[in-house]
Amino acid sequence: MTRNDQKPRIEAVSQPLYFFPDRSVSASELKLLLAEGTEEERLWAISNMLRYAQWDDIWLHVTHDEVREVFAALDLPDKLRQLLARMLKVESPVA
Image (cartoon, rainbow, N blue to C red; front, side):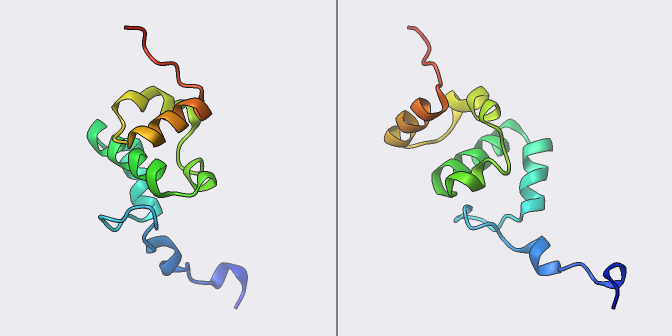
């Protein structure tokens, strides 16, 4: 079988990502959520990535700037929020 005759690996396309414990989400579904989802869906997806994904895996799907833009609205535990704020150099608003 030549390279062009090979069938796509369906398992790789539909395999759920490990960092969504509450719902099965594939890489293609995540891409669609981030590109075309509602703000609530995007926040949910980014929050899950930041909570559960390995550091390098997060940045395969979003950029630092994209996370910074929505940082205040993300659902994160306080300690993780503080750690990420320092790592991403997120400025806290002045009260």
